[in-house]
Length: 121
Length: 109
Image (cartoon, each protein chain N blue to C red):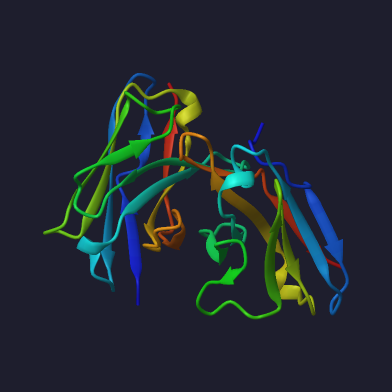
């Protein structure tokens, strides 16, 4: 069965950096795009970014553009979210999610359990 | 402030039908497919519907989706206590970035 396990979350000071990892299993990782979505405490879902199946292209939300970088290592079945210049409003649970793979759009069909990132002094 | 507008909460009794609306604009729902996600407290979201009205694998046929113009609707018939959750609609904006609704809390009375 599909499993996604995030790691790397924790407490970081404003202006600091953190790198999240997501390890996938149960599907052919190298053929699917992957997303990161975050959820601030008590709030709704916010899409963070997407990395193409081959890592050849990535997209990110305006709110994180220039600060967050998405990448993947298909040999390790892992996708990464490198976060720099962190702000208190980046505090959230960060989920990685698999894309369904339909040409009609991006649909996130499996999600990890998330990892909490807290930005605070 | 979410790009897509959902009612904060809806409620209905077990066995009844409930609908959750999702309102957007021409630039998002009006020209793109809509999907729906279910989230229980403390858990990750789960894909329910995609391409407006297609159920994801394992989703009971009590769940349905529709879209008309710049609005979409999730319907749940034969409401069960285990349907009590948060529901989110999603589509894409003019930059083709995914956007989510603010979420609707479904209470089964």
